[in-house]
Length: 525
Picture 1 (cartoon, rainbow, N blue to C red):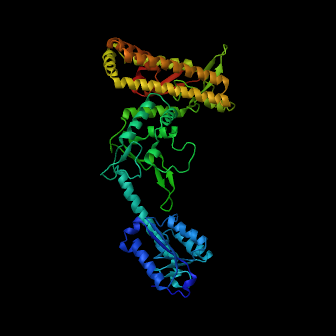
Picture 2: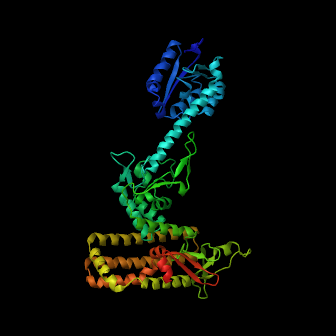
Picture 3: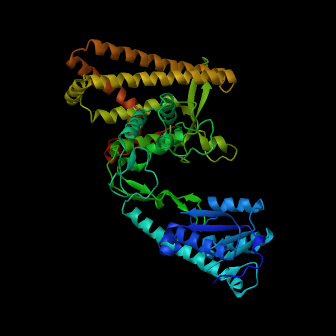
């Protein structure tokens, strides 16, 4: 088995040992201890000087990006090593292309002699064993491919059964302390998740949610899980609007196990590609939900509705809901001065905007307020058929009773204060944009007045809540006020509009077509 070495003192040997989880299945003969014993016996018998022993324990042979192997390559580059010895060729690697590269190009170019004991391979002499080395490498590669297929099959089976096979559960959950492949609620993180969904449902944007969480120094998921942050940057360790948006659309929070969102290119590469949604593996009711399905769907509609608009400069009630009837694309919104010099928003067809000379579509120009008022009026008519103030009175009375609880009242006060703080932050940001020239004076004044008006309204509401906390009014009077406020404001609630309306279409003749989400409302309209 052992090969003759005529001049041992000319060499500085590197003993390379590798063991992966798959290799352990072959039996104890592949253990690190066994390999070390065999290599030491060989160098002792042939009086070979050993520079160092390099051990990669738990590393697959399909990749050569292993710490000990790379350290050995570094020592070869530094001319500290000129002989590499392994137990067999598969210890060097199972990727036949890279194994061939090192044996036939890299080692000869660096004047490194490679010896594989059990295979009888020795690049320092001419032998028949060397001639069939490429075939041995291919067989080792085929073994790795077969193992990869078996592992993938087992993982796919677990995914279809709704068992968790990932490294870290989604934020808000943790691994079950006793049961394998199962997740349970992480109470600390779960409170943050529930709060994020509550804020989104109230109409707060993903960016504003991220800003507020960062202001409160709440650690984002990666920091909370203690994961390596990678390359450090100005936004490392902070919440982002993208992270919030992804969480708000993650079905894991309603009790469904969502896996298979990425797939590895091959068993030889660690790179993963994103899968289309239809290829995800989703299994319902696998664990305790954090968010009820109705809330999740409402939030998803709110988030999705914002995708239909590219401009965040102008806020309007029908944002993301209004489309051109002729071409089907979302309508754009423009700001124009009227005769009095006031800012007025107009809807126009985006297709017409982009391809005016081609005559693809017509302008569809109409005041945003005209369309919004017409849609709100139609919603009021539909809601009036379903809402009876007398029937709402007991509900409102019960709501007042619940609201008198100190915890609920405090929560409402905190929510209003939070919105005030967000608006104040927006004002500060806009002022900075104005100073740097990113925001024009006209746009600054228009947005400033609107945000300031909203903040003043919220401040008045905050004073009212604090006053009610000190001296609560009659329950019946408050109940009647709740019914009146609901009737007056429900139809101007964006959450209500997104829940009731699928889309609003504007025809070339300025006709407004409302498409409801429910057939009963379609019949009424």
